[in-house]
Image (tube, rainbow, N blue to C red; front, side):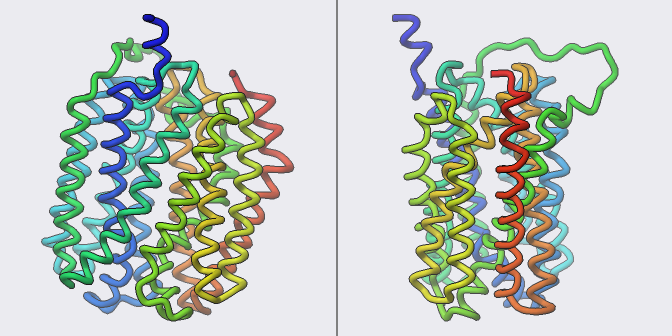
Length: 395
Protein backbone atom coordinates (compact mmCIF):
# COMPACT_ATOMS: atom_id res chain seq x y z
CA UNK A 1 0.00 0.00 0.00
CA UNK A 2 2.87 2.34 0.85
CA UNK A 3 4.49 1.65 -2.47
CA UNK A 4 1.27 2.34 -4.36
CA UNK A 5 0.98 5.72 -2.69
CA UNK A 6 4.54 6.59 -3.64
CA UNK A 7 3.85 5.64 -7.26
CA UNK A 8 0.71 7.78 -7.48
CA UNK A 9 1.14 10.37 -10.22
CA UNK A 10 -1.59 12.87 -9.34
CA UNK A 11 -0.72 13.47 -5.70
CA UNK A 12 -2.00 16.66 -4.07
CA UNK A 13 1.30 18.52 -4.32
CA UNK A 14 1.66 17.72 -8.01
CA UNK A 15 -1.90 18.94 -8.62
CA UNK A 16 -1.18 22.21 -6.77
CA UNK A 17 2.02 22.78 -8.72
CA UNK A 18 0.08 22.31 -11.97
CA UNK A 19 -2.59 24.78 -10.84
CA UNK A 20 0.06 27.34 -9.92
CA UNK A 21 1.77 26.79 -13.26
CA UNK A 22 -1.55 27.31 -15.06
CA UNK A 23 -2.05 30.62 -13.23
CA UNK A 24 1.52 31.65 -14.05
CA UNK A 25 1.13 31.10 -17.78
CA UNK A 26 -2.48 32.28 -17.89
CA UNK A 27 -1.31 35.68 -16.63
CA UNK A 28 1.50 35.58 -19.18
CA UNK A 29 -0.82 34.75 -22.09
CA UNK A 30 -3.33 37.39 -21.06
CA UNK A 31 -0.81 40.02 -22.15
CA UNK A 32 0.88 38.24 -25.04
CA UNK A 33 -1.59 38.74 -27.92
CA UNK A 34 -2.40 42.38 -27.15
CA UNK A 35 1.02 43.83 -26.32
CA UNK A 36 2.05 44.45 -29.97
CA UNK A 37 -1.28 46.20 -30.56
CA UNK A 38 -0.94 48.09 -27.26
CA UNK A 39 2.49 49.41 -28.24
CA UNK A 40 1.29 50.38 -31.70
CA UNK A 41 -1.97 52.01 -30.58
CA UNK A 42 -0.76 53.66 -27.36
CA UNK A 43 2.81 54.68 -28.20
CA UNK A 44 2.63 54.57 -32.04
CA UNK A 45 5.58 52.17 -32.09
CA UNK A 46 6.85 50.82 -35.43
CA UNK A 47 7.38 47.15 -36.24
CA UNK A 48 11.05 47.11 -35.34
CA UNK A 49 10.44 49.06 -32.12
CA UNK A 50 7.73 46.58 -31.08
CA UNK A 51 10.18 43.73 -31.61
CA UNK A 52 12.88 45.55 -29.68
CA UNK A 53 10.65 46.34 -26.68
CA UNK A 54 9.10 42.89 -26.43
CA UNK A 55 12.37 41.04 -26.86
CA UNK A 56 13.70 42.57 -23.63
CA UNK A 57 11.41 40.31 -21.56
CA UNK A 58 12.78 37.20 -23.21
CA UNK A 59 16.39 38.36 -22.99
CA UNK A 60 16.29 39.00 -19.24
CA UNK A 61 14.36 35.75 -18.68
CA UNK A 62 17.02 33.74 -20.45
CA UNK A 63 19.81 35.61 -18.62
CA UNK A 64 18.17 34.58 -15.36
CA UNK A 65 17.67 30.92 -16.29
CA UNK A 66 21.19 29.62 -15.51
CA UNK A 67 21.27 31.42 -12.15
CA UNK A 68 17.80 30.03 -11.39
CA UNK A 69 19.04 26.49 -11.94
CA UNK A 70 21.94 27.12 -9.56
CA UNK A 71 19.62 28.64 -6.92
CA UNK A 72 17.09 25.80 -6.92
CA UNK A 73 19.89 23.22 -6.75
CA UNK A 74 21.74 25.08 -3.96
CA UNK A 75 18.97 26.43 -1.65
CA UNK A 76 15.58 25.23 -0.35
CA UNK A 77 13.50 25.00 -3.49
CA UNK A 78 10.20 26.10 -2.01
CA UNK A 79 11.73 29.29 -0.61
CA UNK A 80 13.27 30.09 -3.97
CA UNK A 81 9.96 29.33 -5.70
CA UNK A 82 7.86 31.58 -3.46
CA UNK A 83 10.24 34.53 -3.66
CA UNK A 84 10.39 34.30 -7.45
CA UNK A 85 6.63 33.84 -7.84
CA UNK A 86 5.85 36.81 -5.60
CA UNK A 87 8.19 39.06 -7.60
CA UNK A 88 6.66 37.84 -10.86
CA UNK A 89 3.13 38.64 -9.65
CA UNK A 90 3.90 42.08 -8.24
CA UNK A 91 5.58 43.24 -11.45
CA UNK A 92 2.21 43.33 -13.22
CA UNK A 93 1.39 46.39 -11.13
CA UNK A 94 4.23 48.22 -12.90
CA UNK A 95 2.37 48.24 -16.22
CA UNK A 96 -0.20 50.65 -14.82
CA UNK A 97 2.50 53.27 -14.17
CA UNK A 98 4.32 52.86 -17.50
CA UNK A 99 3.11 56.01 -19.21
CA UNK A 100 5.87 56.22 -21.83
CA UNK A 101 7.34 53.63 -24.15
CA UNK A 102 10.67 53.95 -22.33
CA UNK A 103 9.08 53.17 -18.96
CA UNK A 104 7.06 50.36 -20.48
CA UNK A 105 10.19 48.86 -22.03
CA UNK A 106 11.95 49.06 -18.65
CA UNK A 107 9.11 47.37 -16.76
CA UNK A 108 8.62 44.70 -19.41
CA UNK A 109 12.33 43.95 -19.59
CA UNK A 110 12.74 43.70 -15.80
CA UNK A 111 9.63 41.52 -15.59
CA UNK A 112 11.50 38.84 -17.49
CA UNK A 113 13.85 38.29 -14.54
CA UNK A 114 11.29 36.79 -12.11
CA UNK A 115 9.56 35.00 -14.99
CA UNK A 116 12.79 33.24 -15.89
CA UNK A 117 13.33 32.25 -12.27
CA UNK A 118 9.81 31.12 -11.39
CA UNK A 119 9.39 28.89 -14.45
CA UNK A 120 12.60 27.04 -13.56
CA UNK A 121 11.80 26.72 -9.85
CA UNK A 122 8.17 25.68 -10.37
CA UNK A 123 9.04 22.98 -12.92
CA UNK A 124 11.87 21.69 -10.73
CA UNK A 125 9.56 21.39 -7.72
CA UNK A 126 7.10 19.55 -9.97
CA UNK A 127 9.80 16.96 -10.71
CA UNK A 128 10.59 16.70 -6.99
CA UNK A 129 7.02 15.79 -6.04
CA UNK A 130 6.72 13.17 -8.81
CA UNK A 131 7.48 9.48 -8.21
CA UNK A 132 10.68 8.60 -10.05
CA UNK A 133 9.04 5.76 -12.00
CA UNK A 134 6.55 8.19 -13.58
CA UNK A 135 8.78 11.23 -13.97
CA UNK A 136 8.86 11.34 -17.78
CA UNK A 137 5.08 10.92 -17.91
CA UNK A 138 4.64 13.60 -15.25
CA UNK A 139 6.79 16.06 -17.18
CA UNK A 140 4.49 15.59 -20.15
CA UNK A 141 1.33 16.15 -18.14
CA UNK A 142 2.87 19.16 -16.41
CA UNK A 143 3.05 20.88 -19.78
CA UNK A 144 -0.71 20.52 -20.19
CA UNK A 145 -1.18 23.26 -17.61
CA UNK A 146 0.83 25.55 -19.92
CA UNK A 147 -1.31 24.43 -22.86
CA UNK A 148 -4.58 25.08 -21.05
CA UNK A 149 -3.32 28.56 -20.22
CA UNK A 150 -2.44 29.05 -23.89
CA UNK A 151 -5.95 27.93 -24.87
CA UNK A 152 -7.75 30.20 -22.44
CA UNK A 153 -5.45 33.18 -21.84
CA UNK A 154 -5.39 34.85 -25.29
CA UNK A 155 -9.13 34.30 -25.81
CA UNK A 156 -9.93 35.70 -22.36
CA UNK A 157 -7.72 38.69 -23.07
CA UNK A 158 -9.35 39.46 -26.40
CA UNK A 159 -12.89 39.02 -25.08
CA UNK A 160 -12.15 41.15 -22.03
CA UNK A 161 -10.74 43.90 -24.22
CA UNK A 162 -13.71 43.68 -26.59
CA UNK A 163 -16.09 43.98 -23.61
CA UNK A 164 -14.18 46.93 -22.17
CA UNK A 165 -11.43 48.37 -24.41
CA UNK A 166 -9.07 49.42 -21.66
CA UNK A 167 -5.67 47.74 -21.41
CA UNK A 168 -5.58 48.40 -17.65
CA UNK A 169 -8.27 45.75 -17.21
CA UNK A 170 -5.97 43.23 -18.87
CA UNK A 171 -3.08 44.22 -16.60
CA UNK A 172 -5.34 43.93 -13.53
CA UNK A 173 -6.57 40.48 -14.57
CA UNK A 174 -2.98 39.30 -15.00
CA UNK A 175 -2.01 40.66 -11.57
CA UNK A 176 -4.93 38.90 -9.86
CA UNK A 177 -4.30 35.60 -11.65
CA UNK A 178 -0.61 35.55 -10.80
CA UNK A 179 -1.38 36.36 -7.16
CA UNK A 180 -3.74 33.37 -6.95
CA UNK A 181 -1.00 31.14 -8.35
CA UNK A 182 1.43 32.41 -5.72
CA UNK A 183 -1.06 31.62 -2.95
CA UNK A 184 -1.55 28.08 -4.28
CA UNK A 185 2.21 27.49 -4.30
CA UNK A 186 2.47 28.48 -0.63
CA UNK A 187 0.46 25.34 0.23
CA UNK A 188 2.75 22.89 -1.61
CA UNK A 189 4.77 20.51 0.56
CA UNK A 190 8.17 19.86 -1.00
CA UNK A 191 10.09 16.69 -0.02
CA UNK A 192 13.07 17.34 2.24
CA UNK A 193 16.37 17.24 0.42
CA UNK A 194 19.99 18.02 1.13
CA UNK A 195 20.98 21.31 -0.46
CA UNK A 196 24.30 21.52 -2.24
CA UNK A 197 27.20 22.16 0.15
CA UNK A 198 29.96 22.11 -2.39
CA UNK A 199 33.21 23.60 -1.13
CA UNK A 200 34.77 23.51 -4.58
CA UNK A 201 34.80 26.69 -6.67
CA UNK A 202 31.57 27.30 -8.56
CA UNK A 203 31.98 25.89 -12.06
CA UNK A 204 30.21 26.53 -15.34
CA UNK A 205 28.31 23.23 -15.22
CA UNK A 206 26.46 24.43 -12.12
CA UNK A 207 24.74 27.00 -14.35
CA UNK A 208 24.56 25.18 -17.70
CA UNK A 209 24.17 21.47 -18.37
CA UNK A 210 27.27 21.02 -20.50
CA UNK A 211 26.27 17.49 -21.52
CA UNK A 212 23.17 18.97 -23.12
CA UNK A 213 24.94 21.53 -25.32
CA UNK A 214 23.88 19.83 -28.55
CA UNK A 215 20.25 19.59 -27.46
CA UNK A 216 20.30 23.25 -26.37
CA UNK A 217 21.82 24.39 -29.65
CA UNK A 218 19.18 22.44 -31.59
CA UNK A 219 16.30 23.79 -29.51
CA UNK A 220 17.25 27.38 -30.32
CA UNK A 221 16.37 26.78 -33.99
CA UNK A 222 12.99 25.36 -33.02
CA UNK A 223 11.98 28.10 -30.59
CA UNK A 224 13.12 30.83 -33.03
CA UNK A 225 10.07 30.03 -35.12
CA UNK A 226 7.71 30.08 -32.15
CA UNK A 227 9.08 33.48 -31.12
CA UNK A 228 8.05 34.98 -34.45
CA UNK A 229 4.73 33.14 -34.50
CA UNK A 230 3.54 34.03 -30.99
CA UNK A 231 4.63 37.69 -31.13
CA UNK A 232 3.49 38.81 -34.58
CA UNK A 233 0.49 36.53 -35.03
CA UNK A 234 -2.19 39.13 -34.18
CA UNK A 235 -0.83 41.87 -36.45
CA UNK A 236 -0.11 39.39 -39.28
CA UNK A 237 -3.60 37.92 -39.11
CA UNK A 238 -5.24 41.33 -39.05
CA UNK A 239 -3.12 43.12 -41.67
CA UNK A 240 -2.31 40.37 -44.17
CA UNK A 241 -5.08 37.76 -43.90
CA UNK A 242 -7.96 39.94 -42.75
CA UNK A 243 -8.69 38.02 -39.54
CA UNK A 244 -9.52 40.75 -37.06
CA UNK A 245 -10.21 38.67 -33.94
CA UNK A 246 -8.67 35.30 -34.67
CA UNK A 247 -5.72 35.30 -32.29
CA UNK A 248 -7.68 33.67 -29.49
CA UNK A 249 -8.99 31.02 -31.87
CA UNK A 250 -5.47 30.34 -33.15
CA UNK A 251 -4.11 29.74 -29.66
CA UNK A 252 -7.17 27.66 -28.81
CA UNK A 253 -6.57 25.36 -31.79
CA UNK A 254 -2.88 25.16 -30.95
CA UNK A 255 -3.66 24.27 -27.36
CA UNK A 256 -6.10 21.55 -28.46
CA UNK A 257 -3.30 20.07 -30.55
CA UNK A 258 -0.80 20.37 -27.69
CA UNK A 259 -3.05 18.71 -25.13
CA UNK A 260 -4.15 15.93 -27.51
CA UNK A 261 -0.57 15.18 -28.44
CA UNK A 262 0.65 15.09 -24.84
CA UNK A 263 -2.14 12.74 -23.79
CA UNK A 264 -1.30 10.25 -26.53
CA UNK A 265 2.49 10.46 -26.43
CA UNK A 266 3.11 10.38 -22.67
CA UNK A 267 3.05 6.58 -22.62
CA UNK A 268 5.77 6.55 -25.29
CA UNK A 269 7.92 8.78 -23.06
CA UNK A 270 7.37 6.43 -20.13
CA UNK A 271 8.58 3.50 -22.22
CA UNK A 272 11.70 5.36 -23.34
CA UNK A 273 10.74 6.39 -26.88
CA UNK A 274 12.07 9.90 -26.36
CA UNK A 275 13.87 10.61 -29.63
CA UNK A 276 11.03 9.00 -31.57
CA UNK A 277 8.56 11.44 -29.98
CA UNK A 278 10.86 14.35 -30.72
CA UNK A 279 11.24 13.40 -34.38
CA UNK A 280 7.52 12.97 -34.86
CA UNK A 281 6.80 16.31 -33.18
CA UNK A 282 9.46 18.22 -35.08
CA UNK A 283 8.23 16.91 -38.43
CA UNK A 284 4.60 17.78 -37.67
CA UNK A 285 5.49 21.29 -36.50
CA UNK A 286 7.53 21.93 -39.64
CA UNK A 287 4.55 20.95 -41.80
CA UNK A 288 2.37 23.29 -39.74
CA UNK A 289 4.71 26.25 -40.27
CA UNK A 290 4.79 25.54 -44.01
CA UNK A 291 1.01 25.42 -44.18
CA UNK A 292 0.73 28.66 -42.19
CA UNK A 293 3.01 30.67 -44.45
CA UNK A 294 2.32 29.07 -47.84
CA UNK A 295 -1.51 29.19 -47.75
CA UNK A 296 -2.75 32.63 -46.78
CA UNK A 297 -6.32 31.60 -45.99
CA UNK A 298 -8.28 31.40 -42.72
CA UNK A 299 -8.63 27.59 -42.91
CA UNK A 300 -4.83 27.25 -43.17
CA UNK A 301 -4.37 29.80 -40.38
CA UNK A 302 -6.35 27.66 -37.93
CA UNK A 303 -5.34 24.31 -39.40
CA UNK A 304 -1.67 25.20 -39.02
CA UNK A 305 -2.30 26.08 -35.38
CA UNK A 306 -3.66 22.58 -34.73
CA UNK A 307 -0.77 20.87 -36.55
CA UNK A 308 1.90 22.98 -34.83
CA UNK A 309 0.21 22.21 -31.52
CA UNK A 310 0.25 18.47 -32.22
CA UNK A 311 3.92 18.70 -33.12
CA UNK A 312 5.02 20.82 -30.18
CA UNK A 313 2.99 18.68 -27.79
CA UNK A 314 5.13 15.72 -28.78
CA UNK A 315 8.44 17.56 -29.19
CA UNK A 316 8.53 19.77 -26.07
CA UNK A 317 8.18 17.10 -23.32
CA UNK A 318 10.59 14.89 -25.26
CA UNK A 319 13.24 17.62 -25.27
CA UNK A 320 12.59 18.40 -21.59
CA UNK A 321 12.98 14.72 -20.70
CA UNK A 322 16.19 14.55 -22.72
CA UNK A 323 17.75 17.30 -20.60
CA UNK A 324 16.60 15.65 -17.35
CA UNK A 325 17.96 12.27 -18.48
CA UNK A 326 21.34 13.80 -19.27
CA UNK A 327 21.63 15.20 -15.74
CA UNK A 328 22.38 13.70 -12.33
CA UNK A 329 19.71 14.02 -9.61
CA UNK A 330 21.38 17.07 -8.04
CA UNK A 331 21.38 18.81 -11.44
CA UNK A 332 17.63 18.81 -12.03
CA UNK A 333 17.41 22.57 -11.65
CA UNK A 334 20.34 23.05 -14.01
CA UNK A 335 18.76 20.68 -16.54
CA UNK A 336 15.45 22.56 -16.45
CA UNK A 337 17.14 25.95 -16.64
CA UNK A 338 19.26 24.84 -19.62
CA UNK A 339 16.16 23.60 -21.45
CA UNK A 340 14.28 26.84 -20.78
CA UNK A 341 17.33 29.00 -21.50
CA UNK A 342 17.76 27.44 -24.92
CA UNK A 343 14.06 27.95 -25.62
CA UNK A 344 14.21 31.60 -24.59
CA UNK A 345 17.37 32.29 -26.60
CA UNK A 346 15.59 31.11 -29.72
CA UNK A 347 12.39 33.01 -28.90
CA UNK A 348 14.32 36.22 -28.18
CA UNK A 349 16.30 36.01 -31.41
CA UNK A 350 13.10 35.23 -33.27
CA UNK A 351 11.30 38.27 -31.87
CA UNK A 352 14.20 40.58 -32.75
CA UNK A 353 14.90 39.16 -36.20
CA UNK A 354 11.19 38.88 -36.97
CA UNK A 355 10.67 42.57 -36.22
CA UNK A 356 13.60 43.62 -38.42
CA UNK A 357 12.50 41.39 -41.31
CA UNK A 358 8.91 42.61 -41.02
CA UNK A 359 10.06 46.25 -41.03
CA UNK A 360 12.38 45.72 -44.01
CA UNK A 361 10.14 43.42 -46.04
CA UNK A 362 6.84 42.21 -44.55
CA UNK A 363 5.36 40.01 -41.85
CA UNK A 364 4.88 37.34 -44.49
CA UNK A 365 8.64 37.33 -45.09
CA UNK A 366 9.23 37.04 -41.35
CA UNK A 367 7.11 33.89 -41.22
CA UNK A 368 9.01 32.41 -44.18
CA UNK A 369 12.16 33.01 -42.13
CA UNK A 370 10.51 31.17 -39.25
CA UNK A 371 9.83 28.17 -41.47
CA UNK A 372 13.37 28.15 -42.89
CA UNK A 373 15.08 28.24 -39.51
CA UNK A 374 12.71 25.58 -38.20
CA UNK A 375 13.63 23.32 -41.13
CA UNK A 376 17.32 23.67 -40.25
CA UNK A 377 16.52 22.66 -36.67
CA UNK A 378 14.70 19.52 -37.81
CA UNK A 379 17.62 18.51 -40.01
CA UNK A 380 20.08 19.02 -37.14
CA UNK A 381 18.03 16.77 -34.87
CA UNK A 382 17.84 13.94 -37.38
CA UNK A 383 21.55 14.11 -38.26
CA UNK A 384 23.20 14.87 -34.90
CA UNK A 385 21.07 15.51 -31.81
CA UNK A 386 19.28 12.17 -31.53
CA UNK A 387 22.58 10.31 -31.72
CA UNK A 388 24.21 12.68 -29.21
CA UNK A 389 21.43 12.08 -26.67
CA UNK A 390 21.48 8.29 -27.01
CA UNK A 391 25.24 8.31 -26.50
CA UNK A 392 25.34 10.51 -23.38
CA UNK A 393 22.05 9.83 -21.55
CA UNK A 394 22.27 8.57 -17.95
CA UNK A 395 18.89 6.83 -17.84
